[in-house]
Amino acid sequence: GVSLPTRDIVVANKQRPRSAYPQLAQRDWQVLACLVRGYGSDRHIARKLNMGEGNVGNRMQHIFETFDVRKRVDLIVKVFELQVDLRDISVEPNALHTDDA
Image (cartoon, rainbow, N blue to C red; front, side, top):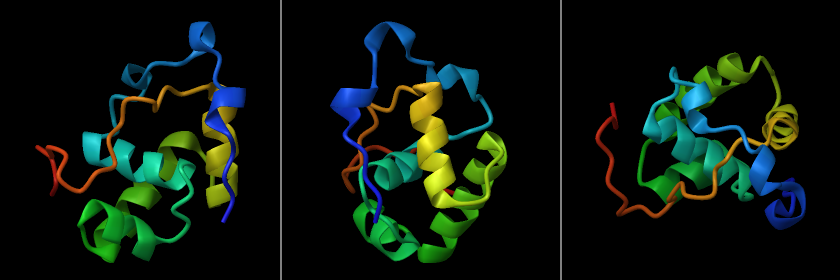
């Protein structure tokens, strides 16, 4: 359970757009946003996003590979260091998903 205060870390004029990572689908971004917002396990993320734990695990592995990390805490730190803009990612279960494979 690691969470970092986004308002203290994100600097608006230095944020890296998500378009810098075209290999990540919208659902991947939602999984990542849940992790960054404090949902620490695949089970918690799956419940929040209304998806299977296995799907979360697969997406998490893809996200790890994309950001070249092996641990969740390293991923969170890297996302904040790179200042990837996650502010508009909805983690509500009823949010529209077009790529929920």
